[in-house]
Length: 137
Image 1 (tube, rainbow, N blue to C red):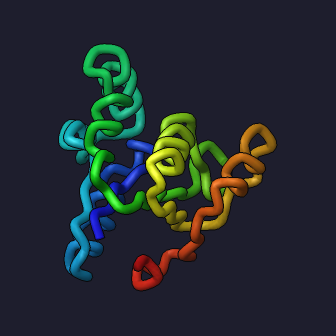
Image 2 (image 1 turned 45 degrees about the vertical axis):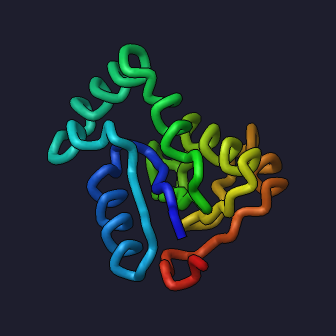
């Protein structure tokens, strides 16, 4: 299965780890082509890179293009900003893109308790894998 790995770029190293683990399981997993500059950077530098890429490299459209022809996405929703299972704005967009493209949506952890869009995520009926990559099929 061709699977895009999405989530906060603050967890780029973990996204790459998940990509490699899924590939080891026989999937064709990928992360954004813009991930490399984030590796090994601290949170402040990652935030600077993220803003630069959104504004100057059209990062949102770049991942949309990569999603074409994929079968699924995996949202790596880890704790961030004091929110358990955080899903930020870009990941929320990518969930919506996957829904419109009729791709499977997998969440690494349960849906976060964020009032603004919890019901929308629920309506897109993601599969929650509770950190178990073997549940992706």
